[in-house]
Length: 169
Image 1 (tube, rainbow, N blue to C red):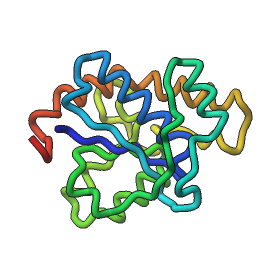
Image 2 (image 1 turned 180 degrees about the vertical axis):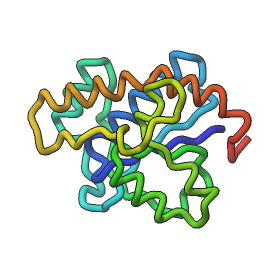
Image 3 (image 1 turned 120 degrees about the vertical axis):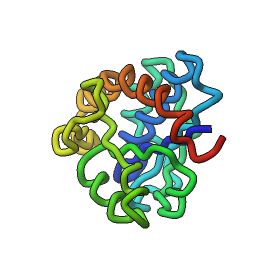
């Protein structure tokens, strides 16, 4: 099993949207049984709360049910069981890499939108998705679009790397 974690700040907007959308894209490509996708936040501020209602509305409009999601804080001990940790912006990227116990583990941390250019080589500074929580409903729609743009290349990258680098087989 290849394990992926998406991470934002509070785990109520970007990271659950990304996790649910990625899980669906993987299932549509026949990889649902080979890849596990979860999400977390870099803080515990929202621990136990559901997805933001604006994020839930955008997901529901896309046919994705987010009612079971509850926010949680990323635990650095999880690094050992994860193959890919996808940060939603550069602040999350930096925080996660700092929490990694060693350079090899830090290399598991990537930006979600690094994969939009199909190479996985986009500079992390240019690959973030801004927090829609402070904005309007339109910002959540834009977040959905930015996530969706990265999915084809991200799914292809996971397909290519799932057997070579999976922590758990």
